Amino acid sequence: MPDQAWNIFLELLRAGLWEQDLQLAVPDAAGWEQVLQLGRAQSVMGLVLRGIAHLPEAQRPPEPLWPELQAWELALDRANVRYARVHEALQAQFAGAGLHPLVLKGREAAKYYAEPSVRQAGDIDLYLQEAEFAQARGMAPDARTASDGAAVFVRDGVTVELHPRYYDLHLPASVLPAPGTPCGELLLLSAHIFKHATGPGVGCKQLCDLARALTALDGRYDRQELADALRRAGLLRWHALLCALLVADLGLAPSCAALPGAPSCKPRDLDALRRIVRAGGSFGLADAAHRRSRKRSALVKKTATAGAFLRRLPFSLRFNARETFATMWELTMGNLRK
Image (cartoon, rainbow, N blue to C red):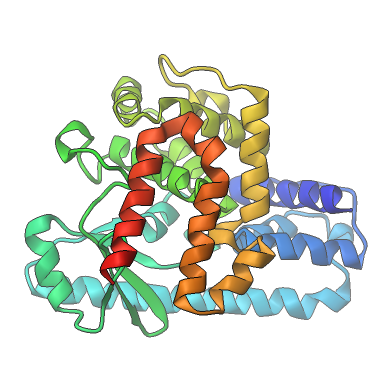
């Protein structure tokens, strides 16, 4: 049943992602529970629920599961409202101080969906240029400093991260696309997925973000510019593999993924990335051991994260050794400074 549940989950995910009707082999109640568990672990319950809405009525989950589905719909709606309220308050606060934060991932990625509310809300990530970051950091006296230098605090139950760096890359800004441009957003999403895929785990939510962005931005950016930026970052081969997965498993149109000079990927690498996504899930939620570590001491959590990076080394070193070691060094030094 696990493979059947995963395949059904992907069908529902594609239906919700692209707003397409579908029919599928109807699982029993236990099978539906497994499908919903995958949606939770991959942080895509909004898309799964949207996919279920595209099923014929006779193929939808059995009546005993309806209260759980309704509870998820209500929880997602409430989370979106709270997220929007906190985000608007922060933007007003920073604008009043003359600051100009750029939204990263999250709310910025949601705009590429046919219905933004189906994207499960998470943290609020804001980037500020060096000259403004210190001032913004001072406006959040309760913030802690993350190992990568971000300032992290909580507002009304929503985690907020202020970033002094736009990209999850250890390169001079002068060799990368300008922040907030179409090329910049695509590079940001691809690099962010690489960082998490080589650590505790990356979920389908982040993959869906990139698939929707590539589709929405098709024809609005210079493909050669993106290919050159990825090559400078050492991520062109990685991005080609990532796009191959988006085409094969999430239904991204191949024309939206094509880049000049991008290498073809090997089937074994595609299978390896599939296993990483499935086994890790969003921030490691699919990994039972990693979930348990999150409920324990800070030392246990840090040890679990370090272990995840080490386990992924055979994969990550094949695609970008420089960024892998730079990220591990940054996390190590950041933790030692605390």
